[in-house]
Each structure stands twice: as structure tokens, then as C-alpha cells.
Amino acid sequence: MHPRARLDTRVSLVVTLAAAVLMLFGGSLWLAATRDAIHEEIEAATRVAEQWVAVLSHDADAEPTHLIQQLSAVGRVRANTLEITTPDGTLRYRSPAPTYKAGRDAPAWFAALLTPDFAPRMVTGPGLHIRLLPDASRSVLDAWDNAVAAAGWALAILVLLGVAVRRAIDRALAPLTEFEAALAHTGDGRFDIRLPRQRSLELDRLAEGYNQMAARLAASLHDNARLEEDQAFSRALTARLEEERRQLARELHDEFGQGITAVRAITGAIAQKSRDDAALHGNAQAILAMTGQMQDGVRAILERLRKPGADAPARLDDALRAYCTHWRGCYPAIDLQLALAPLPATLDARFSLAVLRLVQEALTNVARHAEATAVSVRVASTGAGLTLKIADNGQGFDASAPSGRFGLTGMRERVCAHRGRLDIITAPGTGCTLNIDLPWAAVPAAPVTSGESA
Image 1: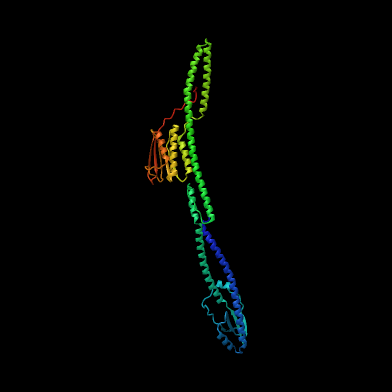
Image 2: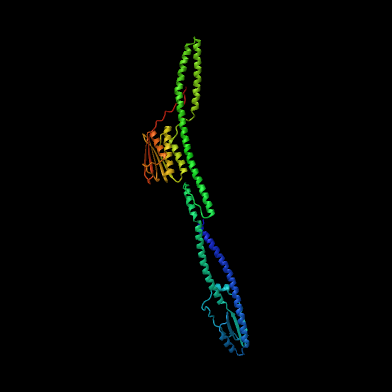
């Protein structure tokens, strides 16, 4: 994988490279124009020098020495090197080297780019051959000096442009840091951050979209938590209703069943002894028929009150695990640890419901008020009852000060209703620990479901 670079670095590099490409293109145009200018300059100087040497050679007498003296007196011919040779090729005179920027020359590669091709010019004098060699080295050196200065300015401009673009992009993208922090906060399961209005229309729309999303997620999380609480309460209420139905069925069976059975027995005895008394025997048979109908009616009521499997008690440990699993899903930013000791297989439904509601209320308070990052729930059983310990690392509170919270009040009332004990250990900045001791509640004996009759 390619290493990832920051967006501001990439954009500044792209802008700087684009500017560098433009400068290189401009430099290539400048090189072409400069080469043409040097060609025109040297060509014009060579033509002038050629005409001057031709006129000087024509006006001179037949003595070659006199012509050489005249040319040497002139010295350097502009942009040309002058050589005088005899017909047999002996060099008689060569013009001096240029004094302009003497001792310096442009680099060979640069000179090769800018130096045009010139043919030597020949002028024949009295007994002499005069050759003009066009020399563009001084013009090329001037172009090199200009190119070096321009390159320095171009480099400075590129550096300044890169820095300016980087600072401008950093300033434009500065709000993205807030977006990153908000998204990280959201990833932890907290949706309370709202982004302010931004300096650009696009970022402002993005911030508005994030705020709406966070608000909807927070509302959904709250609704889901409340729905789960309502579902837990509904399940507990259903369990309570089932218990009431079972208790009512037992009472109907015990009270009405025994009474009806007794009435039928007495009436049967009367019917056997009153066979000679037609009126009494008829009334006894009528009573037997009526009690039979009553017995059938009670049996039908018992069948409606009882449902298959309704006598199976709810398991408190399964309910606690299920609720803690759901709570972790609702509040992923808080680490919940559940330590659950083995519990009796059968517990009183009201006792189990009370324990579940205590855990539910304690964890709800942690999520809403504690600002904790970790909470532990420990459930243990003893011979006398059940111990419950819920501890968090949140901000804590002053237990002696009135808080106006009804959750703790409700917990105290539940614990008191089951003859238990609630201890709160907390202080501002030290978290909160709830220690709850509940004595075991008596489990009603399971009624007989087979072989019973009314």
C-alpha cells in the first residue's frame, strides 16, 4: 500500500508542481526566444564586421603589414574573432580575447542549447586571407546570468507559493479536526457533541448533517433503552399476572373443589336414602346435576387460568445476563463487567423481579448521571440470601445532600419491601458503590398439575 499523505500536503504539492510546470514551459519559451535573439544579434554584428573588413582591405595598399597594423590597432571586433593568414596558411594575426566578463563562460550544456550555428566569413586582402569567426559566448554568458537570476526568483516564488497554499489549506480544513473529534466521540457511543457553524457553505452543510444524525441517534438510543425497560417491566408484569392466575387457580381448586365435592357426597347419600320419597329423591338428583354443572364450570375456569408451562419459574441469572447484554449494546462506551454466582434454580417471582429492577435502576443511573467508563455488577448467594454489588468509576455525588432523584428512593423502597439493606458508598470524584443484601423469599409450593380434580 502507498503511504497516505495529508490532504493539505498533497494539494500544496499539486499547486506547487503545477506552478513549476508553468515556469518550465515559460523557461522553454524564453530559451527559444533568447536563441533567436542571439542569432540575430551575432548575425548582424558579423555582417557589419565583414563589411568593415572588406572596405578596410580594399582601401589598404598592397603592403600586408600595413593592413595587419590597422586591424591590430582596432583590437577586438564585436562578437567575432578575426584571424589573418597568408596564402600558405601561416597565421599572421589573431584578435585578442574578449574583455567583457573575462575568465567566465556559460556551462557547456547551456551554451549548446543557445549557441546558433554560424559559418566563418572569409575576406581576401592584399596577399592575405582574413577570416571572421562569429563568437556568441558573451551573449550566451549574459543569457546564463539572466537564467540563474530568474531561476533563483522562480525557486523563491515556488517556496512562497507552497507555504502560502499550505497555510491557506490548513486554515480552510481546520474545522475537519472538530469533525474528527466528533466522529470519534460518536464512535464511543456518545452523541452529545454538536458542531458549530463553519466558514464555508460545504462544511456548514456537513456540520448540519452531522448534528441531525447525532440528534437522531441519541433519540433512537434513548428510545431503545426506554423500550427495553418497558419490555422488561412488561415481562415482569406478565410474570406477576401469571403468578396471580396460578394462585387464583389454586384457591378455586381448593375452596370450590372441596366444597362442591362435599355437597355432591352429601347429596348422593340423601338420594340413596330417599328412594321411597319421590319428592326428596327428585330434589337430591337436581342438586347432583347442578353441582356437576358447577364442577364442570370450575374445571373450565381452571383450564383457562392455567397455561402449559406456566408453573415453570423464571431464571434470575438468565434474565440478568440478557439485560446486561442489552445494556452493553445501548451504552458501548461504558465497560460493563457481570460476575454472576450460581443461583438457586427456583426463586420467588417477586424476589427475582425485585433484583432485576434494582440492577436495571442502578445501571440506568450510571448511564444517565455517573459519566463513568466502567461499571461492575457482582451477584452472589449466601445461605441467608442474595448480595448485590454495583460499582462504577464515575463522578460520584454527595450522598448526604438532597439529589432530587427518584431512582435511589425507589431502590430503597424495593429493598425495604423485601426486608433487605442498601448501603451507598460514594463521594464527589470517587465513583459510587451500591451494596444490597436481600434475604431469600419463600418459594410457593408448586401445585399438583396432574391427577387433581374439583
